[in-house]
Image 1 (tube, rainbow, N blue to C red):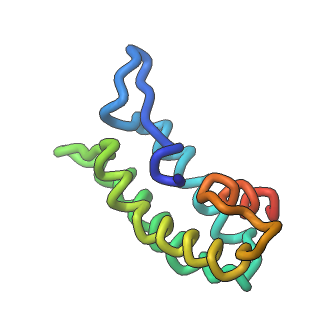
Image 2 (cartoon, rainbow, N blue to C red):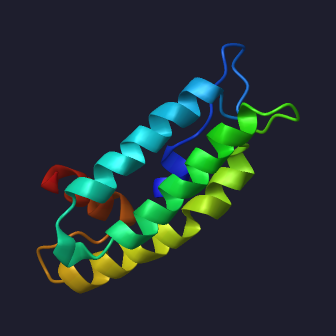
Length: 113
């Protein structure tokens, strides 16, 4: 699903935390989704909230104490978005010829962009 597809990968191969640049890219990607998915999907609200959380992490990383986004934090932040994507999939992509998996539903949403 959405929260498992996006994982940190550091230069040394570690997968525990995102780099600052990765969070910047992630924030931009979430902004793209929030502003371009069809309003009928009703995902903008949760995506805007996720973007706010990511921007807060970026600001915290610039402070004296620093900040980070680990893989587990990402999964928690993404959980409301995943829940809404599942609802959209069940509501708008249900049926005999429609997607049966979260992976297919997510790709359908991305292709809508």
